[in-house]
Length: 391
Ligand code: PLP
Image (cartoon, rainbow, N blue to C red; front, side, top):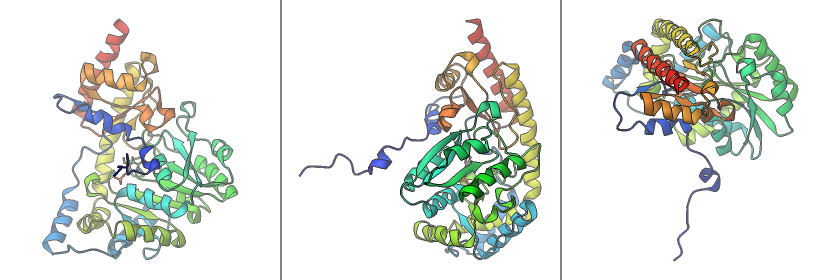
């Protein structure tokens, strides 16, 4: 019998693995490595939040929850969205608790895309966006957020990319990997494009709490946009809960009904103990979030200053926990720079092209690591850059 060469679907075969993992794998077996590569907090989840999960286990809450999530958690999410972001959602029909923001993005795309529908994806961006559009049968249309505009996409760029098939625009602000945050006025201009062409905004607001200079505006709070926005968020970044896999999505009831069907069949419900932890995080975790934010702000100021001083031009990121310095002055490509830095000084950074073609010439350095580690990493990077110019 003749064997098939592969059982994999063609569109899956053609998918490239994430460019981030490659650099972590390269450090296997190396000692003394400092990683500025990770996209997750160095903090441990606050104790009261961990304790809430432990107590839920002690109380024997080990079965499935409602598909959309525990009613109490959805109520807390609704209160939080209204109090902190000025958007009202009905916890019974407009909120679903998901397995991280990752699942929320996936079910949103799968719910709205017919085969061949286009989604405008602003690059550089989180690595999953374009692949998830493809996996949902859609076509990602890349729109670059340019350096000369401080890595903020302009509304006219998006409008120029709109076709008959465009269904949605994916926005992530503050952004991973650039840290750039859209102002309210910039969001309003993008909202006008969405309204004019009847497009959905898929707004990834996972870094909404990690904003350092300005007030944050949710896309759903922009006048007239609530009905055209799918708002994705979660607990991973602000409450240091990456391993719990807990997120949520808010959207008008009709869209939510579609997303919930996919979630129901694919996932059933998010982890029960994580949901109990989430309730505690929303009720009593805000002061921990404020403390962590304060620490990230100090680290950001330090790392941005250090990178600029060593000649790696770096704009000031307004949110998230990433810097995105230019490495063009070294003459290396992003991948060469990251590889040589790792070999010479054992510091991990992520090549900017892992986040899309607009990221070439840059590297992502996360400052979600302790100040002591950051100081050491900056000393090593300065030495690396100085040695390059000496040679
Ligand atoms: N969206 C962005 C912009 C991210 O940076 C990340 C993680 O790095 C995610 C979503 C995924 O978050 P979660 O852990 O909630 O799945």
